[in-house]
Image 1 (cartoon, helix red, strand yellow):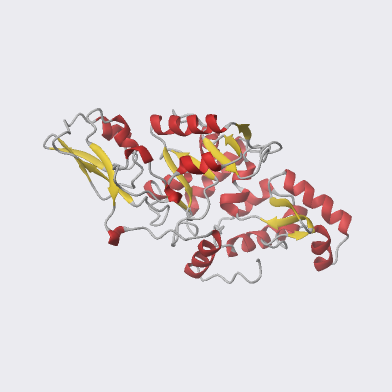
Image 2: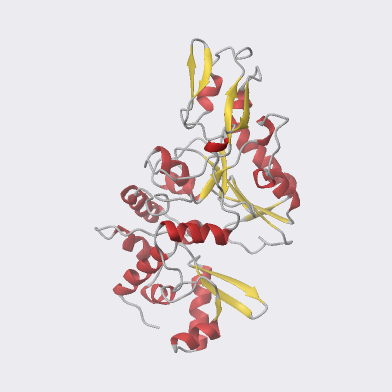
Length: 361
């Protein structure tokens, strides 16, 4: 299969028809990002893949190409994190990946200073639009369970610990956001090895070039460490499956920057909890203010007050020595509606962006 400069434009248009979006820039910044990731030949083939996944034989037949050549190229593309590849009852299948969460994150092991600068340029110009400009958000905040008021019922999709406990494989990755920022000279003070992944089958991460396999106990310790240092838990914005946890800071994380820096209205979904203050216990020490990454707390007349910027993460309450802070359920009219499944999320996002999925699915 031959590729050309036009192959990048084809792929860019295809990636932008996925609900997760890949917005084009007038100056071609988005194309320079793809040129770093793909060769023209790889971009050409990627632009013709489907998200549902097909065997090499099916792809070759559909595109009227040689099966061996297609299969070899697909395997190379999988090794470079450009596409998804997996085993099925029908054989090994290959599928188009969305830009985020997908192709970008899979460049973790390849990222260098040049790519990090390209990404910063692209994110700054695009302001993470497309993905974050419409509902539903791609991520949601997960609350620190131990600071939720004890009598409140917690839904399964809000209990990260139970998802970790129920898994059979666990892994940790470097946070690509922190890696990218460090490469452009903006290293933050938080540890970068904080992204947790888990799966329902054993040895799932043994051959994953981006992931270090760890134990369940190590996963739980890392989760607690992230909370203790003030990182915010986020995950995929659905109710059905939690299989990864990002531990985010507002200085590096693309999701949190989406709201704070780029002012995107749907950067992420808040947790359906809000912080409350027991004014009889609060001594106005201000320890909680330093922990909040959203400027949602302030001291008024010696007492902590919570404003409407609270996202319900709960990390501020962990440093309150007086136990004056607790998470409670938001009022019903302030609830975030999390899509039930990934399929439902895709359908809602496609409708919001007025996208026809028939060609790529």
